[in-house]
Length: 245
Image 1 (tube, helix red, strand yellow):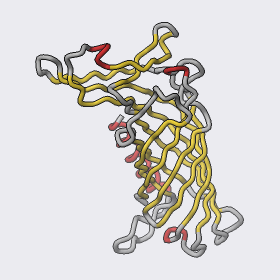
Image 2 (cartoon, rainbow, N blue to C red; image 1 turned 90 degrees about the vertical axis):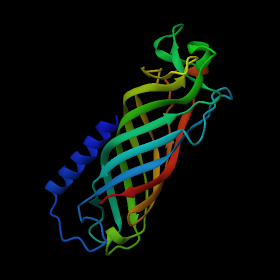
Image 3 (cartoon, rainbow, N blue to C red; image 1 turned 45 degrees about the vertical axis):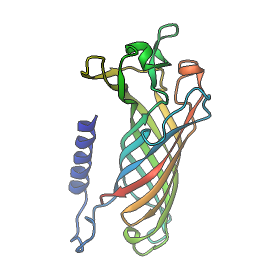
Image 4 (cartoon, rainbow, N blue to C red; image 1 turned 60 degrees about the vertical axis):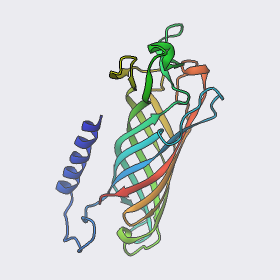
C-alpha cells in the first residue's frame, strides 16, 4: 500500500506539471501548479458503536493523498471555486484490549467478529502491534470560498463538500512475540464485511500550505449484519493537511 501511495503521488505530480503551464516560483514559495496536492494526516474513530467495540485513539490513524483541481464559479475573482479530485484514503482501526477482527464463519466469508488475539494464537504471547487497515479510492468534491479574491494561492479559505470512496482492500496486521521469544507478524487480507462504498460530508479550513479538515461518514462502515456485534457504526475522521503545491 505504501508503494501504491508513492506511485500515486509521483503520478499526480507528473500529470499536474505536464498539463499546466508553470510560472517562476517565488523564493520560499510553493510550485505554481494549478490545483492542490494534499497530504492529510489525522485520526479515525467510530461513531454510534456498541460499548464492546472500543478503539484506541492514537493508533487509529488516517492518511489521505488527494489531488484537487479548481474550477472558478461565478467568474474570476468571485472567491468561489469547485474543486473535484481523486486520491487514496487509508484508515486504521486499532481495537482495545488486544482484540482485532476475524472472519465470522457463522455468517460467511465477507463478515467479521471481534475476538481477543490470545484466544486465537494462544495465551503465551506478547502483542506488540494490532491494527486493521482499510484502503479506499476516493473522489473528493469541495466548494471553496477564498477570502483573498485577488490571490487564491495566498488566501485563507473555507470549504465544504463530500467524498465518495470505493473499497480497494482491507487487512489486519498483528505483531507479537511468542513463548519462545520469536517475533512474528501476521497480515490477514480479508473483507471483514466492510461496506464496498463509503460516502460522507467533508469540511476544510485552509491557510497557504496548511489546512485543518474533518469528515463525517453518512453510511455504515460495515455491511448490514456483517460487522462485529451487528454494529451500525459510521466514521468520523479529522486532522491536519499540507498542500505540496
